[in-house]
Length: 258
View 1 (tube, rainbow, N blue to C red):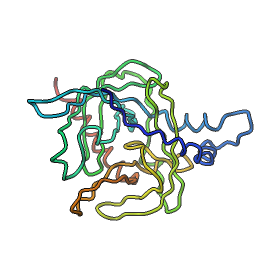
View 2 (cartoon, rainbow, N blue to C red):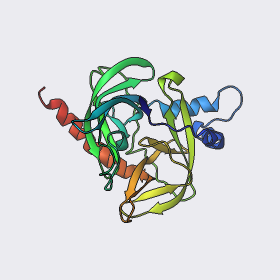
View 3 (cartoon, rainbow, N blue to C red):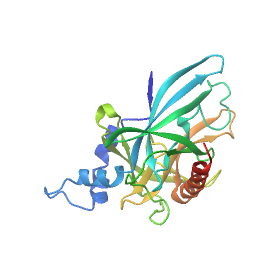
View 4 (cartoon, rainbow, N blue to C red):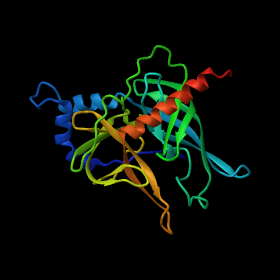
């Protein structure tokens, strides 16, 4: 059994033509393909993360392989993934769901089939994000996303784009989704509502100038009789704070003796 976090969103690719042209900063004059330029600009930080998912109890458990796209968010190689990859659900009200635990993480770069062992460095249950620290990267050049100085701020009506990769069987091909900011939430934390299905979880979302504006994650509304999960855009400043905390934990774990 194989699990992969991915949604096709093929119609969004067609709707995103204008966004792609703006992101690439070039016109379609025939000399350079704007789709290629845009995909290169926003997909270099994306890696494939493989793991083993244990489902059930200690006495009655099964293991399945899992796969999700992660984003490099620090020159050290720190990888951000959706926290929902690690467990059955988020928040409260998941007691009836099967217990799920992820382990045996490896990171694969699209241009290199080598598998780099990784450890779970940190998790943020409020933002539903997790961070992995791969080992043995050596002097490999890391193309990462900067959520600090270059980050943008979403505004109502603004067009945003996200990018994900398909699996190895489809050559890790990158693809776009397009969003429009349609609402703003203040509780339980500042977040934004996007106008269409949000399937790119735990990965950077960009404005049309190519600046990261945040990350889409699942959030739980536990104020109802029935616990409901929905996707929201977490702004870049909150994501950056979590990344900095995760970076410190990763550095501390590297200093610990084996």
